[in-house]
Length: 71
Image 1 (tube, rainbow, N blue to C red):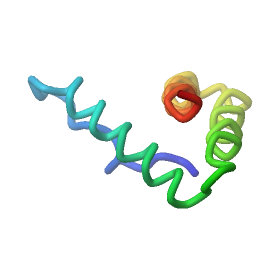
Image 2: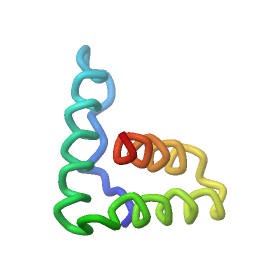
Image 3: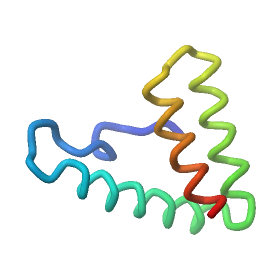
Image 4: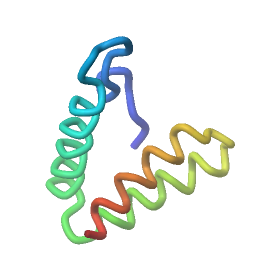
């Protein structure tokens, strides 16, 4: 479940943080819709895969999504 370029907010915009928050909310919602009760596990695997590949940015992204799913 790797991110594509459409999931990232565009660079250089004044409201990047609010766009990122809305985007993260949408990803959380879509992940729950797709995986149901095991959504946190699916996202944890995405974070683990990114960590194994040494992709720090991707790892932090999925870790943030995982933390939102746990709350």
